Length: 430
Image (tube, rainbow, N blue to C red; front, side, top):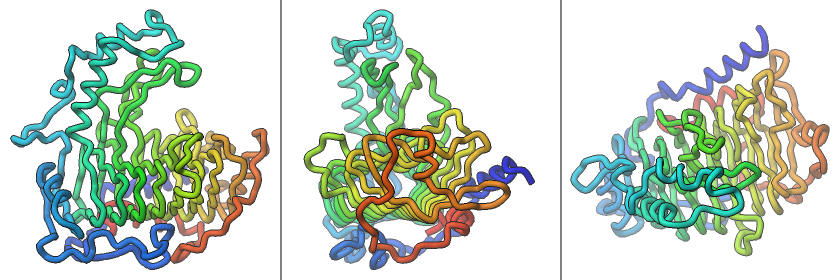
């Protein structure tokens, strides 16, 4: 059997989300807390979410309006999502689209004509009436689809088909949140901004993540699935020679967030997947952003798996499937003052994917990487991520992140990670 065939098998196993095993439909999931020692979210008193909610604080929601009302109810609260909730659902139950948010004369056609680099140039960001209209239109969409999650909350899907579509859940400056067993779909931005000064060729930038953590503490993200559904990044058009980026992150952890565990999730077919850290010059992020990322599936994602600044981030027992080299950028982004400890992960790479691209230098200097494996020559074999990177890049990464994780319940042999994670990660498998 050739390596390409083995990769096809690995990708097929990773795609098993089409028919997940039966999930618990009993509301007991809402009463579960983060196990002791399970990653950084177990620090201190741990993460309990709304598990202690009295009966009157337990809600079942089926619409956007019901979800918003449940978030506003007293804490601690358990919120069960039943069926599919669409963030674009209006008060009367109808579904809004991009045209409903557009205001001030904004149209994409007019925007493209006004800020075409051949007309506008490449040395300044857009400004003027059409940019003002885009900003106002984006504000209208934000009011509809960006919803804040309060502290003392457990948000959990009932059964194996709980879906939150077109919403950006914002966990902002609160403590003690659990989000489990939900499929997050397509938080698309109707009004991306063109920035001709972003990089050498300019770039389109969008606003919304599926889930955003800003200044949040003690958060457990477990057994969720993140997907762009029938609106993937790969299907977007190109304008001004660059992809029209309508998605931002699937799960971003920024602005001094701290003590977060991201476990047993499924991230698929996305570009900017998981950002940890706000900016290279943040004065609030140093000493924060302690995050554990374990037993997650990253299937055909392009970059940020995760990208890290400042934080002590333990990345272990994750399964990475990278079938094609054409659009893949990197897996682990080693950013400013980052302290990544990457161990016992498994990488299934297409035959033309350069393993030297698994790491990327975003201004960091060192990381720890040990006991990782790569699918090669018909079997999983050890891969020294740092040595492979250093062989073709300068400057070299150092090999000691300066800390050793202690908060973890178990670290599985990386050789069983592809099957284990493929079968158990994602919504419907909690």
